Amino acid sequence: MTFSSIAYANLRSHAVRTLATLFSVLLAVASFVALIGLARGVEQSLLSALNQRQTDVVITEKGAVDLISSIVDEDLAERIEAFDGVSDAAAELTRMTSLDNGGSAVVVAWHPGAYPWRALTLSQGALPDERAGEAAVVGEAFANRYGLEVGDALRLFHTDFEILGIADSESLLTRNLVMLPLATAQRLTFREGQATAINVRLDPALSQAGKTAAIERLKTGFSEYAVEDIQALATGHTFARIADVLSRSIAVVALLSAVFAIFNTMSTAVRERRGEIAIMNAVGWSRQQIVLLILLEAAVLSGAGGLLGCAAGAGVAHAVAGWDAVSGIVDPAISPRLLAEGLLISIFMGLAGALLPALQTTSLSPASVLRGK
Amino acid sequence: MTGASSIRSFPPKGSISARDLVKTFNRGSTRALDHLDFGAAPGEMTAVTGPSGSGKSTLLYALAGLIDLESGSVSVSGETPRTHAEWTRMRQRHIGLIFQDDWLLPTLTCAQNVELPMIGLEHNQKRRRERVDELLKRVNASDLADRTPAGLSGGERQRVAIARSLANRPEILLADEPTGELDSGNSQIVMDLLTTLSTREKMTIVIVTHDPRVARACGRHFVLCDGKGTYSDLSSETEAS
Ligand SMILES: Nc1ncnc2c1ncn2[C@@H]1O[C@H](COP(=O)(O)OP(=O)(O)OP(=O)(O)O)[C@@H](O)[C@H]1O
Ligand SMILES: [Mg+2]
Image (cartoon, rainbow over all chains, first blue to last red):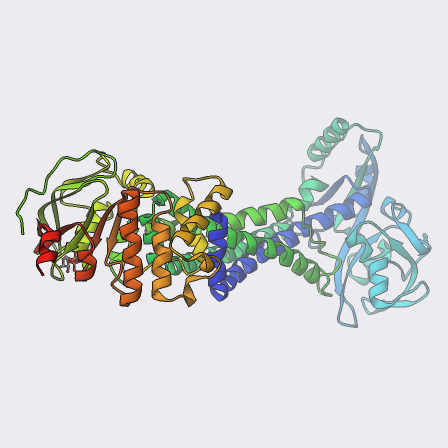
């Protein structure tokens, strides 16, 4: 028999109470893992889409709250391309639109021949050329979801588009995109001459330091615009920031409620076991040992809840990411680090919730408890 | 009754003595111990008797360091513990405790209950288990080792509790009405056990009891009344009755 087997026996003897508390820890840790994982996933999916596109810098309207509401002049791309250290620049128009079948689509548009088109890997069909009008390339996941093939029609902006090609990509966002020729998209969304962003590819021959310097020069040269490297864009983006703050606050509430559940369980346990605690003290267990035993019980309980919560959270995040409303936007980023954080937090919660009840045991007077039941 | 002085001097190991103990309850209105002196020599078996509420249990808990006293001091095997930590160590190594209720932990088996006091003192699991076997055999409860206390009779439970009190080979055993809940057959078994411990192993035993038969089994007799105590020579008293 060891310390932990006593703790385990105590937990097992109140199976229902133990399971109920374990479940509340599980829920708290699951929401922490799922929410933080999804929020980070928003950043990750944007970042990997931009990476796949070989974009280093994105230039948007200064002060725009998100990528979609930004407006810049499409001719800005030419001025930027002429800039020292820049290899390519492409005007991009991004819209989110609903589909006739109730789903939604993220639509991006570039001029045919622009570098983001060239960065695509097509699994079927071809890219639009200069003369293309109502033509689209869709990501493979998008095509699969709606059963689309090359030559099929896709209705967007009240217009039928012909699917020219299907693109495969490492990036979940790209796999779910609808890509159009810029001029067509501008005309159908009444944004002639406008773009939402300029995608910039720096000279691939530049060193990392050279790239950083080029970005700095772009920032000074185009100070009336928001010039951001893609890392800053992904994390600093309002959408990502809101997701981050929201997920954190909900997770904190869930975690605090679990601390309270543990507090409640452990104080009930301590109250019920006054006699046992008194007898342990009477047979020579020190107060510290008794406090440790109570803390250990809480840590075992919350640690088990945390483990299950990590698994449940990862499962929930992947399930949520598969929902039609968000699929293609969010790729849950459940890293081992996030799981370790979830587990550590759960154990910490257990200790925090059990501390007061554990310390209460030291103020029990064994004699008054043991003198008779 | 002899009014002999209750303070004597003993060789330290196994002796227990108390001087000038004062313990009040209810903001001083109840004097459970009123400047009480008590002493027991190594190997002695003392019965503490007296009317209900006279302070018997309070004395026993004071001897075990389980209550905070207003004044007075207790010496165990020549040491005078003062802090909670010192008392805990004292109970762990030198004092075994038995109560009217057995206070076995319901979540543990009988063997684990007996093992409980050894945790923190004997770190070798195998030696602990051997000691548990030996103790359960001693109280004739070997067959109860793997059972939990729930289904056991009062006599069986009290025997296991006695085994637990002996776990760390204490020199002193303090018992508060150990037969209070038992029928006469089981009382006899428990008393035979305690008597053997006193005579064969020279353990110092203090038993609080209401039962004259239990008191008669003890060599010395300490009578409490209103928090004050006197010794009476029991052997002459018993022979006279
Ligand atoms: N925790 C306590 N709070 C209040 N009063 C107490 C407490 N413990 C003991 N007393 C009082 O102290 C006095 C002595 O109590 P104690 O339990 O020592 O008596 P006792 O001789 O063991 O009695 P009994 O034979 O009924 O067990 C009694 O008046 C009792 O009510
Ligand atoms: Mg009593």
